[in-house]
Structures are given as structure tokens and as C-alpha cells.
Length: 333
Image (cartoon, rainbow, N blue to C red; front, side, top):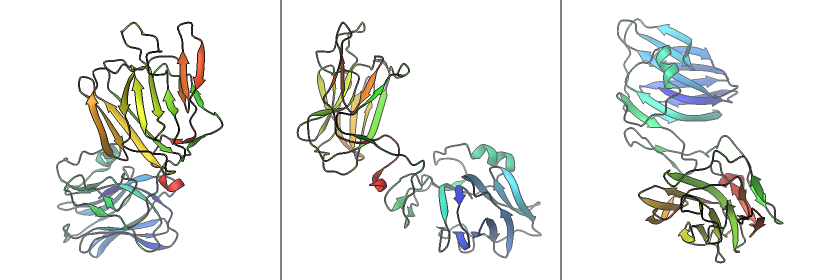
């Protein structure tokens, strides 16, 4: 069994419980890994997330091993093979156990120290040979942890802890962000593009969240025949649109100006479609044939940018909101 874990337990607590299977108990930073009547103990590092492999090797060199980031903390040689039933439910956490865990993997094979070192840096698909269960635990909300290997989903009865934590940008009183180091953000008309963000506002008003131009016919045509300017706007009814090449693409099905966090995403597949999503639900799918790329030496967040043919710059259409671009901010108020 493998998982990423950061320990904050100070007393005695169960980390993993499985009847007739794998069990792991914490006493502060001392981890006891046991199967049946056999166990091995090791001191784990609580200062950071570490990748743990609890290995039972049967056969000629039967043993129990605790690996931390591919390094053996402790091992115990066994005189005989152990009885192990991997069909019983696995419980993670319990009374007095404090910590953060994710990327839980349950295998029907052993791992050497070298193999565990490599495994810690791999993201699994769920289709790997000998993988019995894979719970990434990256949903961030809800009561289900999806098993990507066998669809035996976990019941999540604890609160999610999003890491790394961050803060949202608060836009008010005509404040905006001006991004000038954007030379690497120049996707062409041949490249696929994905954009996503979290937004929270109580004000339904015509305004702009993101812009490198107006997105309409006022933007000058460039050498590739496109204007290559985008403007993500809020309309007067509180709904959102992407305006590019003077075409409006719907980003939300209703007003998002309800003082709650909403996640907005859109995916542009060249030669295919533009798909937009509101809180994980698809709201639009239209052809991507007419949308350009993104070009220019500045992007503005929280207002609308425009440069004319003589490069005179105008910033207007300011937005009042909170914007967040990392994992879910819903628990931050």
C-alpha cells in the first residue's frame, strides 16, 4: 500500500485499518505497520509530505518493510508467509489521528526501495497492472473519493483540506492587475487553449474580468487575419461571456452574481469546439473555427484593455469581485 501523508498526530491513532489485512497505527511520529500478529515500527518525518510504501513481501525472503520516499525506515524478516485478505474494507483515519493524506494506492505486488522511489513521482491512470485500488483524493469537495482503478469509491466523512492554500484578488474602486511579462502567453490560432478561474461577486454589472483587448471590431486586424484579442466579460444580467473576433461565447448559463464562489472554465480545441463549463457542468459547445489566438505585451485582470493603431492605451469596464485561480476557495469564505 502506498500514499502521500503529512503527520500531525501527537497521541495514539489509527491511520489505516483493514480486518485481516493491512493496519497502520500512529503513536505521535512512530508508525507501526502490521499484518496479523507481525509488525514493524519506524519513526516518520512530520515536517513535510512524504511518500510511504507499506510493503509485505511473501516467499523466500518474507518481510514487512516501511519505506519513506523510497528509503527503508525499518524492515522485519518473517519466518513464514502471512494470511492476508485484501477484500475487506479499508478505513483511513480515526480518533486522535491528525494529518493529510492523498494519492492512496493498493497493489497486489511488492515494491523495492528503488521502485518506490520512482513510483512516488508517477501519476497513475488507474489501469496499471496489479493495481487493486487508486484513490487520488483530489476532488476537493463532496463525500466521494473516486477509485480510478476498480470504481470502488471511498466514502469521505471528513472535511477537505486544500493545499497549497492561497488568497483571492479583491477588485474594487477601479483596481485591476496589469500583467506585462506575458511573452510566453501567446497561443496561436493553431494551438488548443484552456482557461479557468473562480469568481465571487454580488454585483451584476457590465464589466470585464480578463482582457488583452476589447474582443470586438475595434481591435486592429493582425497579420494572420485575426485580431487575436479576448475579453471575458460580465453582462448586465450577471452572466459571463468570452468576446473574441466580435463573437460572443457563453461561459455561464445564469447569473453568477449571487455572492457565492463559481468555477468557470472553457476549453478551445482547434478544428473542433469551444466547450464552456460552470461549476463543472457544461453550458455550451460551439465551433472553434472563428476564434483567434492571444497576442500582445499586456493582459489586464479586473478591467478591459484596448490599444488602437497608434498604441494609445485605454483601460475601462472595471470589475468588482473576488478572483481566484488555484484550487477551490469555497472553504475560505
